[in-house]
Image (cartoon, rainbow, N blue to C red; front, side, top):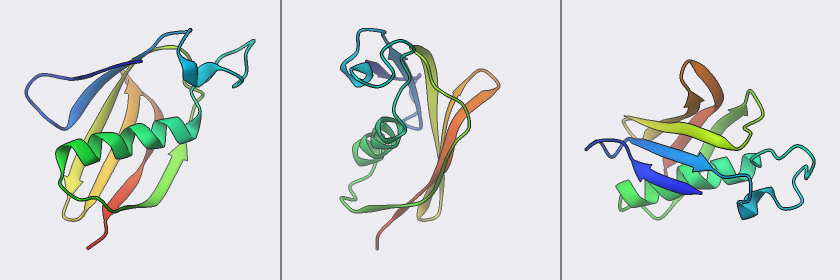
Length: 103
């Protein structure tokens, strides 16, 4: 997996999943799909990198499409103590949800 900031904004990340990435081992070997827990963990990882908060709570998360190997954008939009996360390719949304700071 390749994870990079897009531009100078800490709120958008470029993520590329290669077919040989370890997240695909045993997760539909004939048709590799990024596990939903892995997508959620990436959101948490990026939020830990942006904020100093160690405790986060998932409020709601939906997986709308299977994410195959390829390039995606992870966008995080802050809204008070909640962060709206979206994994997309162009106009297609693959996962979206809200993660809150535990205060």
